[in-house]
Amino acid sequence: MSLKNAQAFAFSLASTLMVAIIIFRAGDGSLSVIPANEFDGDDAQVLLEIDPFAL
Image 1 (cartoon, rainbow, N blue to C red):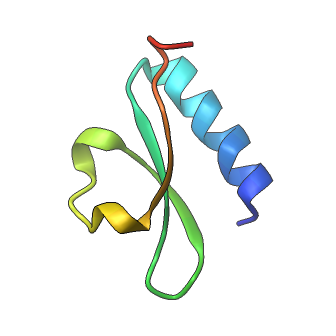
Image 2 (image 1 turned 30 degrees about the vertical axis):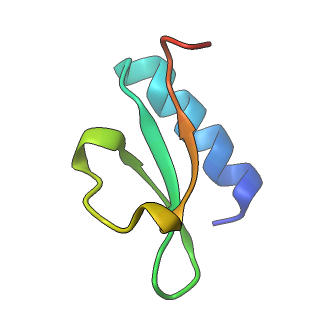
């Protein structure tokens, strides 16, 4: 997934679910999107956090 697609997907999820969403780089180099409360990985992997309440 490209960064542009990941950002669009994360923004859509954050707006729909009204939860903070994290975009992170997985171990194989791909980008992934997950709700912030479910992320238990290394903080260094996080590229962006989208908080719908801060928009």
